[in-house]
Length: 398
Ligand SMILES: Cc1cc2nc3c(=O)[nH]c(=O)nc-3n(C[C@H](O)[C@H](O)[C@H](O)COP(=O)(O)OP(=O)(O)OC[C@H]3O[C@@H](n4cnc5c(N)ncnc54)[C@H](O)[C@@H]3O)c2cc1C
Image (cartoon, rainbow, N blue to C red; front, side, top):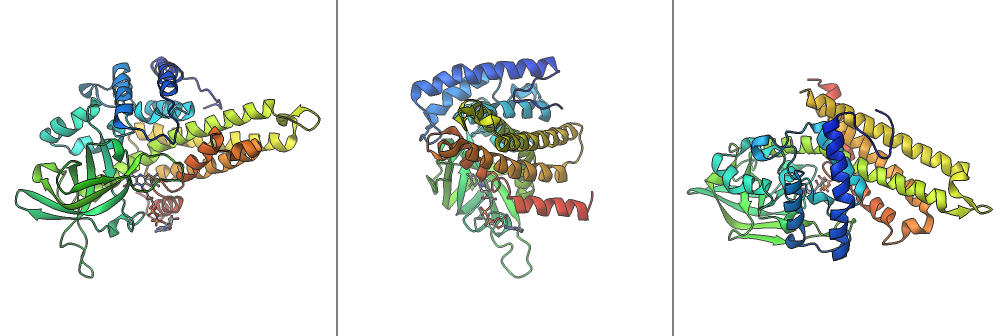
């Protein structure tokens, strides 16, 4: 793999897809956003997103990674990553809605494999068509990295379950019709030494006893997360996802794939930051009217930024290629998530430094990207949790 701020692809099909995606992001989608004046801090509504889901579906991008029977192209992880990278690099506010990250097929992840016929028909096929949307609700105020300490419970009740609890930071919550909720089975894990058992449920967000609240706003300033509050919320047995007691495996399995698939989006955003920074250094005049890029101090910074980006990108695509070949890349996924998050943070910090006061000014894209990228060291598992995973893989190789 060579270094480029606008990668090309030898595979003609992928090259065509990337070309068409760039055209859509830079043309039609940019126009849609500009006409409506959307910014990353806009309070977007479902009505703002739905036309993008539908259009992306028409263009073949929404759910493109899925098998043909579900309207996709059965894309490899590597090819999907190349598309995700382009979206990250586009800087588009609604980029998250093109491939189905915001409530669509990518948010649901690989839970398709656990769905019953009825669940497929009622929830997941409409989701793939962009008619319904979901969020994924695992985290609670006092249960983040240590998800097993969650307090949300599910108690058997007649033909279903009663759910009680309060989930926070469910991405896509403001646009979702249903949530994939993981809850502890009531009566398990309560006594000393008793192992908790967890189950996953598809919960209609308009069910009696279920409320969706705005919740906290993260430092990115985006309004794309919700709290999901469950108060004696009845969930029919038909909405149990997979087997009772296997919910944590389903949830964490989804997180492992997502961990690797989040990396190209961040790499794309980092690529954009480097691009914007190079542009700035070519035009910003300092020191006797010379552009910033003529200063060795600045040249060294951009050299380090590009080198870190190249390393992050190379290792991510190497892990993705191994995953495509069926390898177990759990440890590599932890490594990629760690290195991509940490290097992107360093790159964005230098991008702000090189932009001077402009990089500190609200409304400047670098200022937004710095805040957005900073979150990635915590999202989808913190850097410390990635290190724990790497060390576990080293200590107990498969
Ligand atoms: C914008 C945003 C979107 C999110 N989207 C979702 C979503 O869609 N669905 C969802 O369920 N959750 C979501 N989350 C939650 C996210 O996954 C958690 O924030 C994350 O897992 C970390 O949990 P925590 O914030 O509670 O940190 P904590 O677990 O409280 O960790 C605090 C610090 O302690 C460290 N630490 C904790 N345990 C260990 C350990 N064992 N070893 C070493 N260090 C440790 C951490 O690394 C961290 O530095 C989102 C969060 C944000 C901010």
